Every structure is written in structure tokens, then in C-alpha cells.
Image 1 (cartoon, rainbow, N blue to C red):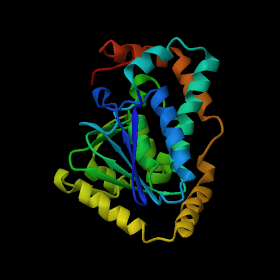
Image 2 (cartoon, one colour):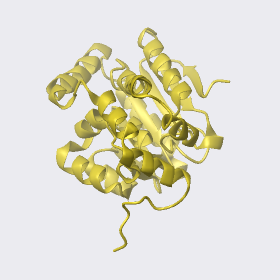
Image 3 (cartoon, helix red, strand yellow):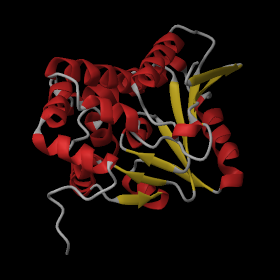
Image 4 (cartoon, helix red, strand yellow):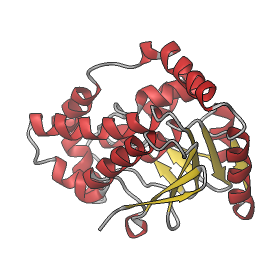
Length: 257
């Protein structure tokens, strides 16, 4: 059964993360579907804009718990391949030649917040919460780092990556991760207004603008990001952090203040 729904309405395609029972958590199957969907939409000339959204009460709660548990048993090579599949999904969204709008609500954690950073424009509902919480698991947000850096800059990225703290939609807007914040009853209307504005842009000019930003910030993209997350996953701290999270206990390094 597909974890992704794609609907086309004229020049607009809507891609919906459709695992509401898992809060749309990312796993290898969903990541591969995202890569295929955005790669496929690249070749659809009639599509000018793509809206990415989540079904149910959450946009995306980050990595799937079963996937996290299984990753502890993977070899180094398997961990690298796993991370490469993850990196490919974010790159497919960021590199999509169409205008990409993210409609975000509820939790957007870890990779879920990374999806937001890959959009051209992000619209969040009031009450949305964000976090780059990997560090609290002894891990690091390697594969999403280029997109987050591009969205909010090195200083804010460093602060949020190293603390792993949660922040709300208003702070996300101040930082630049989110561009509009709307009430729940105005969320779809606000997304529609953003899409309408993007459809007024020349398709070639829009693509050129996207590519200009990617080229200008290419120094923030490293070649070894899958290896970095694999190193964290296979290390003692990463194994302890994931185990503690799955067992609902504090990790061994936790210190009460």
C-alpha cells in the first residue's frame, strides 16, 4: 500500500504524506516514494507547482520508530546506503524544477522539519511545532543540513542543531524556515494564495531563480553526508541514544540541571 498520495488539479499537483497512523513518519519506503514522486513530476510539463502536505494531525514526526530500531542492526555499508536513500529524497524535493510549497501543521520534527526547509515557500498552521532533535538521540541531522542552512543560516542552524529544542511557528517564521503562518481555518486559503502568486512567475525564470540560490550556496553541500550519519548511527553514543528513546528512558549522558 502506498504511503504517498498524488493528486493533480490543473497546473498544481498535491503530494500527501499518507501514514497518519504513524504521524507520517519517514521510513525507507516513504522516502523512496517521495524521490520517485518529485522526480516524476519533473517531467510533467502541465504541472507548474507542487504542494507537499501531511494527512492526519501531524505533518511529519521524523524518523519511523521501527526504522530507527532496525537501523541498529545494519552494517556500516547498509547504514550508508540507507542514508543515501534518505538524502536522495530531500535532494529530489529541493531540486524539483516546479514551485514547491509545503503546507505544514502539527509536529514537524527532524526529517519532517527538513522537508519544510526544502520548499520554496512554507506555510505553517498556528500551533505547529518544529525541532531538529537528532542530537538528543546521539545522532546528527546530516542529510537535511544543506537545506536547513540555506533556509535559516549558519548561526540559527547551529543553535537549533546543538540544542535539539522545540520551537513554534512564529519563531520558525522569524528564522526564515517558514514564510507564512495562518490559523487552521485559513491554512488552505493561504496556501492557495501562495500557489496563485507562484503561477504568475515565468516557469523558466522560476527555475533559474531556484538554481541561482542552489549555486550560490553550493559550498554548504558536502559529499560525505550519508557517511556522517552512518558514523553516528553505528557509534556507541548513537546506539545508546536510539535505545533510550525506544525504551522511553533518559540516555546515559543525560544530566539533571
